[in-house]
Amino acid sequence: MQIVILTTNTDPTRQVRYLGPYQIAWWMRENGYSVQVLDYLYFMTKEQRLELFKKYITAETKVVGYAPFAIFGSQRFWHGEQPIHDILDEIKFNFPWVKIVLGGVYVLGWLNSRKNHIGWKVDAVFKGEAEHSFKEYCDYIFKGEKHPPFSIEHDNKIIRASKKYDIQTCSMKYSKNDFLLPGESLPFEFSRGCIFKCKFCQYPNIGKDKDDFNKEIDHIKSSLIYNYENFGTTRYHITDDTLNSHRERTQLLHKITKELPFKIEFIGYVRLDLLYIWPEQQDILPESGLVSCHFGIESFDPEACKIIGKGWGAKNHKNALADIRKKWGDDVIINCSMILGLGKEQEEDWEESQNWFIDNKIHDWNFNILTMYKNLQASEFEKEYKKYGYRFVDDSNWNWASDYMTRDRAGAWAKNNRQKNLSATTPSVWNYSAHTNLGFTKDEILKHNYLSINEVRERENRTEKLIELYYKTAMEY
Ligand code: B12
Ligand code: SF4
Image (cartoon, rainbow, N blue to C red; front, side, top):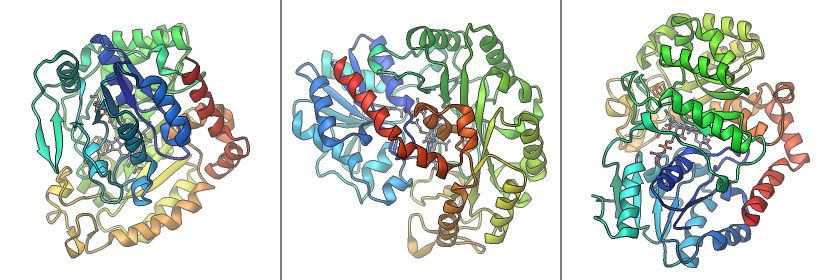
């Protein structure tokens, strides 16, 4: 293989594939390169990884890209998990002839994380979408063409997107050597970027026009058919930031899924407000195959909702949620995420929200601490933290406080609460996909909570079996 891309999810209980590496692999194959993606590496032993690397990283390999799904600020970093970085050492010291490059979600954050550093420099880091920039780099390495423009930041060579990738024309398909496993849920993209601009959001591609960066509906249809015919795929986890943000496209999606000679099921981020602004979505999304969705509720406090830019939610969150839960029943497993640290909310307000979820039989919910990095300057909150009533304690980059809350207090409450929730909530969205990957059916998942399903998973060594199957398939290919 000319190019090998290494990736892995890094949450112990969530074995689901990450789209970025497969999207780049497909694109490079379209451009004439041979590419191998190797996945699930975090869950393998060092020895298994080395065997796999030796099989695919050969004399013709010139570039090894590494893109784990690991976001700075997630538990992997706070616990200082080392394997994420070990993988880089394993490549550097066993395959000295290859260029080692990094890409993927929040790549600079994890590279620069102080706890987990590597003692040498990678050859290049790709920031942001990389279809064009990575192709230009490979054309330079393999064909001697011009090196793409770069800058040096924190001692790293950073290569940014040279131009926007035309997602409209993307007909991304999986490949036989992606080693897809029977029944596995695959990541899939309908569109790129988000039309909203929530004040706390650190994602760069927000505030787009609804008609921009949408994949042609015919390409979506042909990829779904291809994946079904070649790999039997019917399950997807959709990567769109809001999969129902375009009224006509949601209707078209419904139309094409009805035309398919098989049924698909998918999970993803859905905006609750849009389900009520365009009420037909309440019917057509489950009919299209939506089996679990994530609603970013953030808060039930009207003032906090208004501050973050969710004015509709200030008035309607509770009524709409109770209504849709009743309407959908168990057809769609609902997850709500809340943010700790908004407006004047205190511990008793969060307790009240939690009780509301329990009383209204919402399947799943989670409370996340507000994340802000003074130096990142990505979200509106980070850019104008004083205006929104926040300060950073002892000149810290991340330890925020307001007149009503501190990050430490929010963290302490979240920690206590998390354990309590595990036995009260049903695996949803990506956790739902992860469990279907381990062979659980929807009916089985609905009968479990996180604790009880974990017991079964551990007792029956389901994760180990999945990794073993992937490893065996890759070694025998
Ligand atoms: C799927 C997903 C998850 C899944 C991941 C499962 C999986 N295996 O995919 C789960 C649910 C586990 C998850 C968890 C979290 N997530 Co998340 N997630 C996403 C989501 C929806 C899609 C990611 C994706 O595939 N995008 C599509 C691909 C094509 O885009 P891409 O990754 O940017 O890929 C491009 C480049 O990165 C690059 N690239 C990618 N791979 C490679 C490889 C090489 C070799 C090269 C050169 C380049 C390259 O080129 C690609 C094509 O242009 C994004 C939102 C989004 N739309 O991106 C949020 C998102 C990344 N998540 C986010 C967050 C905050 C989290 C959590 C911290 C949430 C939480 N509080 O727990 C956790 C962290 C988990 C962890 N371990 O680190 C934020 C990150 C914000 C930020 N600061 O950047 C996002 C942007 C959502 C948002 N809008 O706020 N997430
Ligand atoms: S939080 Fe979600 S809906 Fe809000 S701007 Fe960010 S990506 Fe869009």
